[in-house]
Length: 458
Image 1 (tube, rainbow, N blue to C red):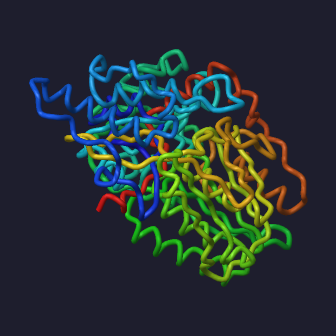
Image 2 (cartoon, rainbow, N blue to C red):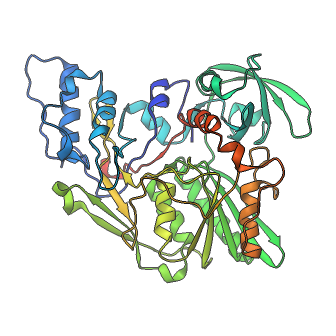
Image 3 (tube, rainbow, N blue to C red):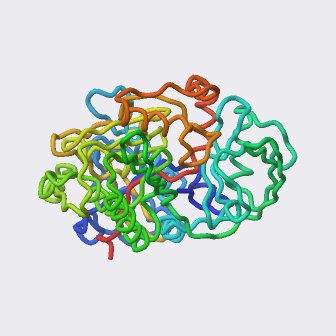
């Protein structure tokens, strides 16, 4: 999920997101703070004061914010949310755990959370130093309409052939934040093509691919899902179609590819979990959400309500450091009920907490407000979820290619019980190069990471 990067540069540079769910979500009408009294202070300072009052009431670590914290010394609510992160002290962690509390103007957030983007629809990552690849393309975007595919190599941007990790800021600016950029691509067959793109608004399509493979005597379903945000009616219709197909074709094992899924609506994650869970989970605990001690009456537990007839005892997820929040919540909720296998280039992002948008003036503030655990009380995965098998992200292959490293290893485990080593040229070591990791972190920063539900604000 990309947030309109060329329209929202401040958000793009700030954002590793998450928000919350619950129909009973807290709102400004039932939070404790009262409006700032009318006096001679400026409207800007009153806005900052209000943002802090709500934060000191609902923030998960509210009691760690010192009385001396002065909201008025910060530029705006966004700066305040960034500043309060330093007080998120958790036992067992030497540094603050909150990387996500943020604020954004309401119009921008409403567009982003509905899956509306305004860019090229192109996501990029380094496969290795100097080798920049298209990692994903939105089909309705300028890049999608131009026929660009995952796996194509980018050799020039606006005529500049300096495609190196040290030039990551230039790449971010021209791929994500520019209104017009020209690209030179090298295709898998070795031919090149130059394409100029103008940024445009489009509706994202989070479901990238669903397919069934017959390998040896196994029927394996494969489902690539890139975001829990967007048109939920369309997503739910597609879930029904996909899982009916998997059941009718006798799928015995399932691979769910969440490697670039930074999250979205938790209600969508719950909906998907009810298709993935085995029948034995029906009626049992899916997850429990807990607020700070002032709002413990809002703690709640959700249960599985099984959908569809697919009844698996194992599921394999392809993940990476871009797999965050609602995606992690989905994985964590299933762990007590079935074998869950994690394959991919790196452990998950590590965000077991959530929040919801609180309107303050023309802004939404989103201070982290609750944490989530599964049936077994597991959930403090601030360091990310560990892998069963670390294997390269096959960035030179399109979705569903049987030779793509992560997908291939997942299939191998299902069929033989052993993970497959990387194919020649697909070594995960190249993608673990510190320069490549740092470069990809910069390239990933503009992409949404979170879990949101605003039903409680209606």
